[in-house]
Amino acid sequence: MRERLNKKYSEYLPPVISGALLALSFPVFDLFLLAWIAFVPLLLSLWQKNLRQAFISGFIFGMTFFFITLYWIYHSINHFGGVPFLSSIILVLLLCCYLSIYPAFFALLFSSIIKKTKLPALFIAPVLWVALEFLRSYALSGFPWASTGYSQYKFLYITQISDITGVYGISFLVLAVNGAFAELFLLKNRVKEMPLFPVSFIKLSLGSLLVILLFTVSYGIWRLGQERPGRYITAGLVQGNIEQGKKWEPSFQKEVIDRYFTLSTELSKSSPDLIIWPEASVPFYFGSDSANTTELMDFQKNLGSGLLFGSVLVKEHSSTKTSLSNSAILLDKEGKIAYTYDKIHMVPFGEYVPLKSILFFIDKLVVGIGDYSPGKQYLTAETEFGSFGTLICYEIIFPGMVRKFYTKGGDFIVTITNDAWFGKTSGPYQHFNMAVFRAIENRKPVMRAANTGVSGFIDSNGKILAQSSLFKQQTLLNKIKTDSTMTFYTKFGDLFSYLCIVLSVILLVNIRWRR
Image (cartoon, rainbow, N blue to C red; front, side):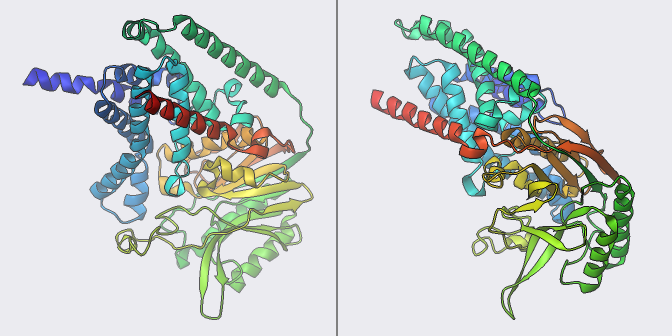
């Protein structure tokens, strides 16, 4: 009995190892090279599994990976949602259960296809993985956090191809290399199972992958060495480091405003073109609170720089109906409103409750959930120092959304956020590093202001030029070169991912036909 249990547990050890290795390739561990071998134990183990066992293996892999990577979500739920510690852990596990369905189906499909076709694992694995990873970024409002490609944000020679394929192209390469390693180990078994197995075709596939990798690196070297036209602008970021619990307290309001005024005045001595404050940085309803609104606009007139800040706005729809929006406002050098953008992609259970008629009990369980109305327009600011869109909070993690701001052109990306919700965890670092890919995909430098960090500057090649410390009152000043390049990805979006979906469907139809 004991031996049987030990055997059963050991059968599911490979997916645990794979999940842990992949998690270690993400911030804050940042052992990004591990991602290139992380899937090998899982892929090898699937050869011996039936479909049920394969599904379970994929699910275990997902639970291991997602819990290690996304554990920090409990902090938001527990500290700011008022949910007890144990209940918050259970809620995180439930989220991980949902996210693990995608690798579970990947494992099931890979196990089925690899045994019934003569196609190489280095083709099957990346095609299926990218198709499912892309679907995860859209299903149920989408949650593309911890997509495999993000682990490679430091590997700039590889990531430059993202301006064609998007981040999912990097996921494809990582899975292709893992598939190649797995193929080398599986080749003997596949030949044994299929006497006419085309070994020469597999060798050709391995050679083709090597050519693709060499092309990708060569493309990266060329892009990194390329000089693109653009002008230099000076920008300043203000990291107020305002405690989340005190942010909206009336007694703390003046201190918050004075802190931002003081830090901005210090930055203004360098005459920046633009000063950026974080998401919801002003502790009042801009435009509705006339006294504080006037004070801010008067301050701006003396600042001598453009000022972009986040604020909650009260929108009046009629004499009796109002709503709130999470917005970004730009004041020009004269203190006049030059641009307003209302956040489009709301955070589920953070800014609104989805399916509220069904989940009516949620806002009673999770204290402090605000109900905001989403914006509808992808607006850009047109200024004397360039054109830019503003992404608020986790909008920056949606590549398809970011590109919509730049289909008619643009010079740089601004993103403002308040990551105080995440605490001193890996969450803020993961959030910041995903912006690297938005810079490369659209060839636009990124300026990121975060209340408690991580704030920073990223150039249009994805190189991090400067970044702040976490939970520290700080300002950053940098000269950034604008970039008006229109990339293939900006123009055409996720064509590569859609191709993977089409190829996955063809694979599945082929398997069904073979039955």
